[in-house]
Length: 234
Image 1 (cartoon, rainbow, N blue to C red):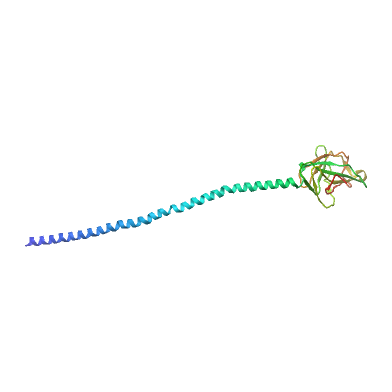
Image 2: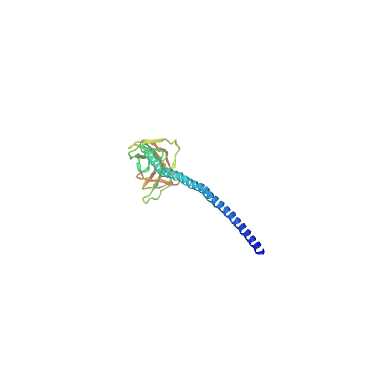
């Protein structure tokens, strides 16, 4: 009887174990079934994200192309603008503008003395092929044979500057005046040349001086320059 009871209990335990194993198997099958569904569900969005990634790269590449074209055309526009400006300046200069030193020839006219004064016209002639202008006073300085300045710079006499237009071959003159040293008693020197600087220029023109002594210090030693007027002298 005891053996029979133990056998019955063992059979019952085996039956319970089989039932539990069956239940676990069923649960395991449910988990396996839901697993692929989750993987399948997440695979869809991942594929969509991958499909969207190239989309931003495509507009980026498109933007780079117009940007590159714009950058390439900018220097061309600047160069064209610069060349246009240069051409405009050249056209304006050929039609007018101030006379440059290299376009002029300087000379000193004949003395026209009066009332103890020495009066010389300083003449600038347009030797270029274009029309140009002079406005205001010339610069001037007496120099010796070695180029050293003799006496002070001439001063400007009162006057109203006008613009003198010089066609090729035409001239303008400014008066150079100083007191006769024999009358004034000023100390004198005999210069070798007169350096003439056109208005608004830095380069000078050298003219041989053959008119004798000029006052350099002492009484009434100043020389004066007038504004430019058309022609070669009074």
